[in-house]
Amino acid sequence: MKLKKYTILVADDEENVRSLLHEILEEEDYNVVEAQNGLEAVKAVNEKYPDCVLLDVRMPIMDGMEAFLKIRDIAPDLPVIFITAYGSSDIAIKAMKKGAYDYLTKPFDIDEIKIKIKKAIELKELSLSLTSSNFGKQYKQDEIIGDSPKMQEVYKSIGRVADSDATVLIRGESGTGKELVARAIYLHSNRRNKPFIAVNCAAIPENLLESELFGHEKGAFTDAVSKHIGKFEQAKDGTIFLDEIGDMSLPLQAKILRVLQEKTFERVGGHETLVSNARIIAATNRNLEKLVTEGKFREDLYYRLNVVTISIPPLRERKEDIPELVVYFISKYSRKYGKVVQGVSEEVMKIFMDYNWPGNVRELENAIARGVIITSVPLIMKEHLPPELLTRYKSEQHEEETTGKDSNTLNGNSSTHSEETGKIEPLPTVIARIEKDMIIKALKKCGGNKTKAAKILGISRKSLFNKIRDYKIDLDKIL
Ligand SMILES: Nc1ncnc2c1ncn2[C@@H]1O[C@H](COP(=O)(O)OP(=O)(O)OP(=O)(O)O)[C@@H](O)[C@H]1O
Ligand SMILES: [Mg+2]
Image 1 (cartoon, rainbow, N blue to C red):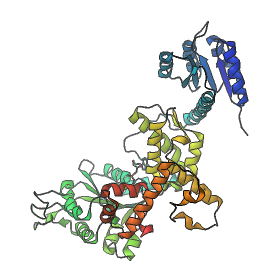
Image 2: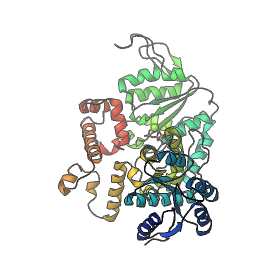
Image 3: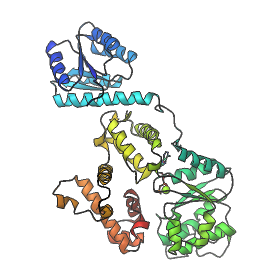
């Protein structure tokens, strides 16, 4: 049942056009108000408060464009859809530039009319709910968004540790904003005018990471044709961010421990002992305690790092941050791609609030970036969301309905799912599922060694790394 009956104003000088639209719209359960020219249309906007206007371009007394400009002054959020004769697209373009919502060409496509009006009203409802919120607010680059109590705690911790030289360990699931927090600590520290150097320990092959961090001397190994200055030397007394530190090999962990304790290191193949005064910020999404018990992470390094820890809560535990993140990412990507997208439909917002967000803020950001690119209306609708997100959302809903039933299906091999049910699924969804399964199999086979897994999968290590991240494959769970 509809809670509210929406009113549509139809302004056209042709009687038969008005009555055709009247009939179609009434069938769709809208109230319909008619106007025969621009002047009447403006009057009707003032008196009848329509939720959407269909406005013919060519009308006597006052034409569509003039009426539109007046309507825009009276009700800036009221969506106006122009009705143009076939071939008069320059007028339509002019109208769109001046802020019309959309246009319809005669002869009408009835389904198109219905869809456009529905979307226009959704947008209007949305902009109403946004006027009181943060829409239009100017954001700084790299700003951390979210006012939930849990994020307030994170901000307090950043404030407490920023100015000290303390080593900080940032923990949180993939995509929660660990790198953003690391940068915020740096930007609020007294080292903000010195370098910030980030190293992703998981994305660089093990044998190259040591030289990446500490540098090497000429001839230190086969490919070392010249001397290389590592990140610690580059950072000088700035800040070095060791991302994904849980993926670092044991021998390298020992060297990091030494930098932390004695502030010294050597280049690979070098004998000179160098001093580092860099501040270290580390981050991981791995379960370090588990890695310690399994002997994969040094206990002493763990204790050394764990002195000051900032834990970023997963997005599903602070859903109240979602609406502002949505506004933030929409404004960011609209600007980036030069599009006028104003929000997400109510349906999408509901999905966003219900969804579990295994990929956290990054997953939300990617969904919105994609939506902004592919939408052709000023709104991101359900059909603009990534198919993988919708598939996961549906299976979450399904799980909720069937809780108590066998939960093995959750992590089981589901690639035969569609064969069993005979259901046709979108190809990208099926391909993604198979790809994910193969990656998990390869990683299991190689005991989590990404270089080896990438090799047997026939892809680069970097691409494997990105896929592990995008598919939210939790190495701790699969190994
Ligand atoms: N609170 C937030 N406000 C605005 N943007 C955010 C927020 N949290 C995360 N992001 C954005 O989400 C993306 C992922 O964040 P980031 O790279 O910091 O995550 P991460 O925790 O380091 O993830 P991973 O463990 O996968 O490396 C980035 O583009 C970041 O700018
Ligand atoms: Mg990161």
